Image 1 (cartoon, rainbow over the protein chains, first blue to last red):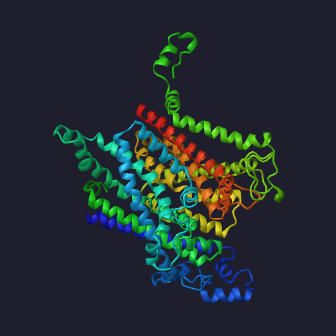
Image 2: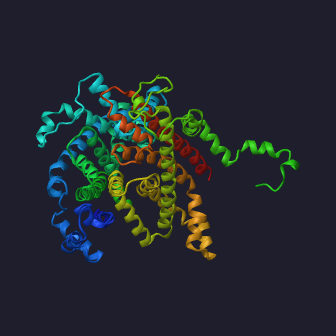
Image 3: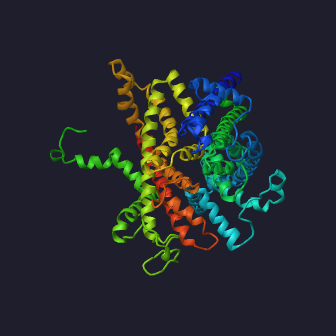
Length: 316
Length: 301
């Protein structure tokens, strides 16, 4: 176990290091360099030269990269051009909101997808299975914003029960006091995840149903309900943990679209507004944070998986 | 293959029918999959609509005509009405479909080609080459595709070509990982080792043995890649980062229609949205059918 942990941890560190390089290179891919991006099209050559000198952009790239890393370790992600605030303080306000949205949507999705997948596996080849499979494929092929739009048209315009805009307050509490505004964003995000997870649960359950331990349990005379709950479900759920880790980038991308759609003041909306206004420090800061979150997230899921399933440890 | 020509071997034809060739089995399994066939039919219909359609139903998709703006479906000469800028909607769908399909196909194929070579080289050479190449893919995978796409399209104004390049630049990672897995198992096969004993180099191994043997995985993955690429195009359009007008794609049509949700202009929303769902669904079904078909080949081996 220790060997596995050390190896996995080292791997994650290398990947983190590479993520910072990618973001650093993106910064330097800006047309006219960072100076042009910060001073805008009206910056004079003197201003640009001065800026480059002060900010250290005249140094060789490796030196600049080192400075960038040092700043990162001090928690300094730069200053927003537009919002007159540091990127890290912006992220401090916005990231928790994105996490709340993502976690709630994931909980809803797992709570729906697991029973659906089980049902499909037990009823395989029957109308219910075909219907749900078709539904999952349909939801999977639909862009998230089109799904959201359909939900808005149905539940906000045709039958006005939920608002089409997320709660706007700056505090976390406002999310929960105006929770009816959260229903449609959560539902939109959850639908896409349900489509993926229910497919997985269906095939994982089918695989497990053919295992020897199921035959043994049946031979012992256990009820099929008990076999499903005690044996099959447990074994099918373990890999779902890895799947969650694997889908972290997809979840963040989903949050980006859903937040822009429902005007939910999270990290995704911050990012989208930054893209509209070419606010590069914010764009790159968010990209870095999302990348780091993904690496850490998949590391955690791998460790949880190894704890849950001893077979993995010995294989790695 | 038999050296006897069919003409002099009367019994040969029957024998061939008893054990159908691999290719024929593959086609059989594919055509038995009704969803996959439906996918092919839908795709062919959409291609005809987008490329032959403008010949049958020519419309002006360059000049706006505000006197004809936002007409409801059924208006004279406009079966599905017009857009907010007065373009005929049916004609607009055709032109938009061309961009969506072209960008999707080109990006999917490009990503698959690059990813396949990357994965094959990484898996075949193994050791530290593999470690370095795979950590690079891990790092690139760690940054969610949408975020990279948005940053890059904020830096460069996208044209069709640039859209293809940047989508391919984030999409090559998954074929790279898949092919690397195949290459790892293929490189220890006897025929690959025999070739190396005879002095064959790495390039020969990768392109003559690893890639051809992983072709099933590659083709199936390419189909899904195209579906994903078409979705990416639509997401970029939704985020306001797509090809500038008067050019358009289905995603741009859909997202400009969103503005008119409150007015009840459903024809600016649903046709484009449904077109995206149809084409992405079709590619996914075809991919699923191909996977089953290629699995038959593997079982035969």
